[in-house]
Structure formats: C-alpha cells, structure tokens
Length: 83
Image (tube, rainbow, N blue to C red):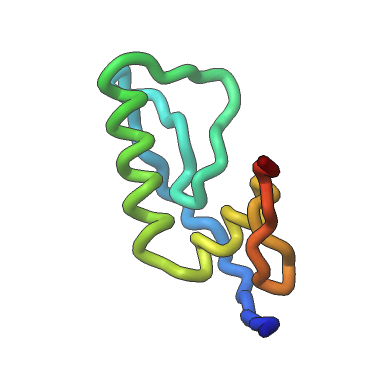
C-alpha cells in the first residue's frame, strides 16, 4: 500500500539556540550555522532540543527521514540494512 503525504515548505524562523558561550549555533530549522562547534553539555542540550522539535511535527520528521535517505519522497520507508 502506497501512502502519499503532502508536505509544506515552512520559512525557517530567525531565532537561534545559543550555546553556553553565547554564540548562535543552530537555527530553529535545524541547520547548523557556520563557524561554531558545540561540545559537552551544550551539544547534548542542542541535540535534545532538535529531537523534541522534530518529534513534535510529523511533517518535519518525514522531511528529516527523506533528507537522511531513510524514506522515499512518496513516504515509503527504505530498507537500509540487508541481512
């Protein structure tokens, strides 16, 4: 059974998550900003915030799965590991 899922394009918000150093490191759309690297607890906090953001919106979750190659544009999950 094929499932067709409509996706909408959202404009990325202009806010950013700030690291402990005060430098902006990731836009709210999830794209990393240039020139900064997170380490330690700041990295963990950023990853958790991104996970919550993606998990809260099924459209964002599907877009992420398509981007990493785990899902086709038609909404079908790919077999990534073959035994």
